[in-house]
Length: 187
Image (cartoon, rainbow, N blue to C red; front, top):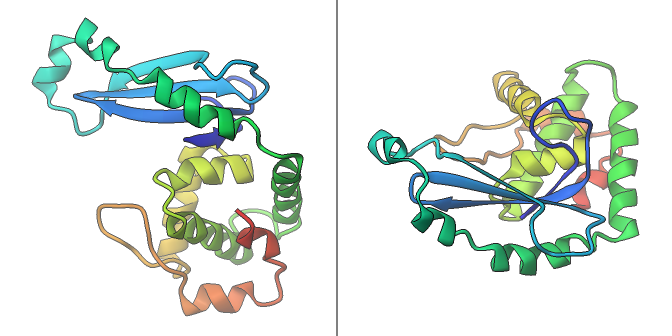
């Protein structure tokens, strides 16, 4: 379950709760706006999972797959997520202002702060840290993944093969000295 401030496509950013479920060969993404009075998803997107068997995908989406979509679990989790406190929303806004105050572009300072936030989400056990980064930074996941790749290439974040993760390097820790990273510790 993840808060998201942007939705796939070219649409304007919108605040909401997103949950991804894997059902067989399919990736089911449910979305609900934060201001919703219902806990039920407003949108459900079904697409082939990245690791799906092509033969299963070729059979298409069956009624069995549709019956397995757990909207009740989504509604239960979404209820708590949609109550994102005003303090939580303020923390995100403050973090974005701090991020905007860093040197422009993909600077060392930006990569160090992004890496620290990423490591924080991974250490919290978040299953989709890129989605969390998208919420906190206001930057699309595809762009953030490129920035994390740059952070690894430039020596701010260690690699973990095959899954989300990594640790801050000494270079990242040294770069973070003198930067107010209090907001990075908040999520």
